[in-house]
Length: 69
Image (tube, rainbow, N blue to C red; front, side, top):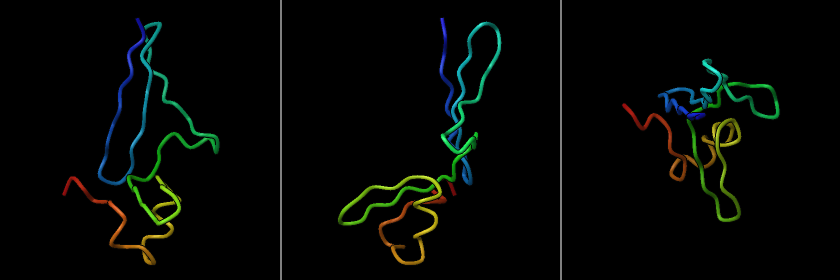
């Protein structure tokens, strides 16, 4: 039976699947196997990863990061 593992890191997060006796990290569309650990909300959208990190200076009060510290 396949199992999913999620690593919520302080800086980056990733997801892997364990099946057929090995782990495969899941890549996003841009071939990145990790994503920055950022989440942001604006009046019109929700953002995760790089999109949220790129707008943190303009929307600091509605952006979550460094949550494990």
